[in-house]
Each structure stands twice: as C-alpha cells, then as structure tokens.
Length: 404
Ligand SMILES: Cc1ncc(COP(=O)(O)O)c(C=O)c1O
Image 1 (cartoon, protein in one colour):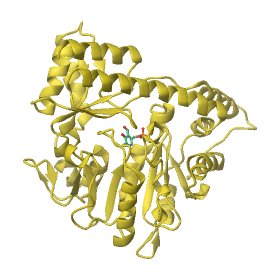
Image 2 (cartoon, protein in one colour):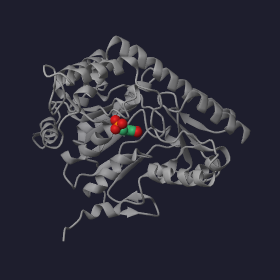
Image 3 (tube, protein in one colour):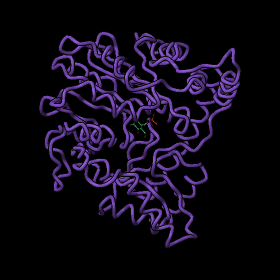
Image 4 (cartoon, helix red, strand yellow):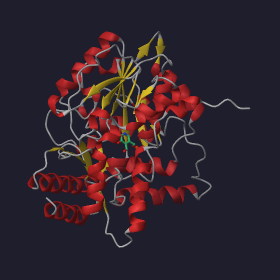
C-alpha cells in the first residue's frame, strides 16, 4: 500500500476561502433572494485593459500561423518579458536587477508555495501573524512546522511575528533564530505597509544571521505613500539575502490569466550554493513555462498605453478602498489599511471574527474575511477588499451605516 505524506493530515480544517464559500452557499440556499455583496476574497472584478487584450489577440494569431507558432516557452520566461520586468519594475526604481535574475511563473501563489523547496526540512520559518495562509500551509505539507496546537492556533516549530495594533502592524525581528523569513508588504491581510527603514532592519538582520527573506510584493501597485519601498532591493544589501515575489494579478487583473515572477539575485548564496542556480534547476524540472500569449500580455502591461490604462484601474480600486475606509470610520469602527493596499482591516466590536462574519452576512448581506482565519493575531479583526464594483462598495457602506 502506498504510504502517504502524513503532513497533510496535520493541516487544520479546510482552506479559509473554501470554508467561507460553503457558509455563503448555505446562506444563499436558505435566503435565495438575498443581494449578497462579496468583499471577501481578494479577486479583481475589472476586465483586462485594452492594451492587454490587444496583445493577447495578436499573440493568438501568431500561434495560428506556421511561421510564428511557438511551442514550449523557455523555462524561465521569454527574454522580451524578463527584460521588460527588469527595466520597469527594478532598474527604473534604481534597483540593480538584471533580466536573468527574473523567473517568470504562473503566479505568486505557486511561487510562494514552492520556494520552500530550496531549503532543508529542518529549516525554521518565521511568518507574520496574521499571514497569507499559503506560506504556512506549504511548509506544513513539507513537514517543517512541527505540531499544531489547537488551543493557541500555532505550530510549535514556527516563529510568529505578531502584527498588531500595539506595534502599528510592523513586525519585530523573529524572537528565535529563523532560517527563512516571510514578509508580505503591503500586507495581506492587514493592508498596512512598511517604511524603507523598517524593511532595512530585516535585511540587515538576515545578512547578519544568514537567514533568507521571502518578500512577497504582490500588492506593490497600490503603494501611495512616500517612503514605502516598492521592492526589497531598494534596501542596501538585499541582494545577498532576499528573494522577491511579484504577481500580475492585482495590478493588471491577471487572476484568471495567470502570470507572476520571482527574483532570485545571483549574489544570493547559502552553504556554498547559489539559490539562483537551484531555483533555475527546479524551474527546469518542474515547470514548463508560462504560455506565450500570456507572456505577451504581460509585456503589454509595461507599454505606455498599458501603464496608463492600468493606472486608471488601480485608481478605481483605491477609490473603493477610500469609500470603505471612510464608511466604516463614520459608522464608528476602528479601521486600518486601505491606503497602500486594497485591503481594509477593521476591529470587530466586542465579538469574535467569525461571529462578526456571520453578523455581516446575516444582517447586511456583506461577505468579508474573518481575521482569525489568517492566524491567532488576526482574531478580533475582519478584512474587506476594495476589489468589488464601486456601486457595491457604496451600497455596502450604506448598509453598514444603517446597521450601526
Ligand atoms: C500575499 C499574496 N501573495 C500571492 C497571492 C497570489 O497571487 P497570484 O494570483 O499571482 O497567484 C495573493 C493572492 O491573493 C496574495 O494575497
């Protein structure tokens, strides 16, 4: 009989968003006429911009002609896209990243789940609490997290870095020695950002201890405030200690198209091994490249029209964030985030985050995400996203005002 990976059975409950989907489906079954507004899952609603769809059409036509047909894409991505990324996302911001340090993928979820494969099974991970669940779950599946304690909601080999009201949602350095430090800023779920000097503290620490930082910058496009770094490579010394993950999902609406990339600098070595070479080897073995048409669509994101059109779209989501932030504040809630991020993080008034979820669904027909689902320090908070339509955000805040 096949022996299974028993680490899977250690995972508590189902994936957060499946639980929410089940709850909403069951509510909808009992209340078929309810006009439910979904501000829960972080999926975009605005369509792809014309610069992107034009590039897709052109690429589809190329694939239909013998002279321009393309088969397998290069494992690490087409050079036209890797070059556009290195130039626009890094060199234009003063970060010295070259195109061969870019690894094109099908999105940041896969990269953030897979990157742990570069490290030994006894490596200790540090995560922010609350946290995007993929970092933890992928390490649990690999067998790196030890045992789960239901009472505390914590894994005994994981080092938690609480991001709470008391520290302004800025994590302190890990309390014990960590080998891998996951950071996501602007943050999902708190919607808060780190200033450059705050991120520099982590970079200096990692260079001192030999830890590697996995920096998830999926929400970079939402940064509004001066002094908030768009890339970890804006910090001195980051190329010897950090891997950055990026996505085309939240800036350009590619959640259904699928495109992302990781940056693994050539200077990043541990135990005499180049993490760049290891990641290239892993990509070559396990990944057969993102589709040509999608990579052409990604290239169009960096064209003049693409940049202008996407800027408008993000402006729209940011306006939604403002409507939600202000609406909640006016209704008396304590609210964080929503300035450098599409996520608004509110304090649940005197009830647990799942009770608040039920109340919102039942009384206001609004779906959000209970903070407790992101880790123990998320308890007492609730996440709303600005990715809905503007009308729905306004309607949701009318309901909040009526019920407060
Ligand atoms: C922090 C973070 N990283 C990565 C992802 C996934 O991005 P992608 O759509 O590129 O897989 C998400 C999606 O919600 C996210 O919140």
